[in-house]
Amino acid sequence: MTKLLLSALLGMTLIGCGAPESNEHQHHVAGIGEHDRCHMCGMMIKKYPGPKGELVLKSGELTPKFCSTRDMFTFALQPENQRQISRLLVHDMAVTDWDNPQDSHFIDATQAWYVYGTSRQAVMGSALAPFSSEAAAQKFAQQYGGAVLRYDQIDLTLLGE
Image (cartoon, rainbow, N blue to C red; front, top):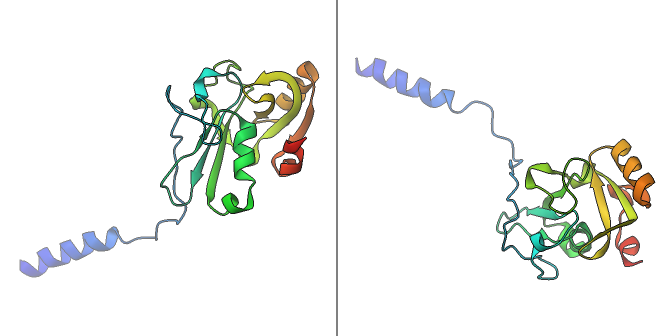
């Protein structure tokens, strides 16, 4: 009986030791609260229109949130910050309201299409408007102006213009 019990316990323990878990952490959107302030400029994030962003740091200690995608990229593209970031999130402006973007519409910033130099204003002036598809970005650019860019085309030089 004791051997049977030990065998059962050992078997249950081994079942839990299957394939090792991935080192990739599953991060959920922290969301932007009514009183959250921009990590870059300190402004109240939800008080202003336009797309917002948030980062997930590798350390998991902090989830920086930003009042604009421009501020998020200005922070994220600095060499000393790039090494610390595991995930960048932005609002998909094809499916959420410009004046009140919803956190349920965050997308991976590295996979998004952007419209830069648009006439649509956000908190920090002309926005870097993110979209989950090229077609949505092209449609927005036709309506409001601006250049359609991929994530890897955005750099500090562009943002400094």
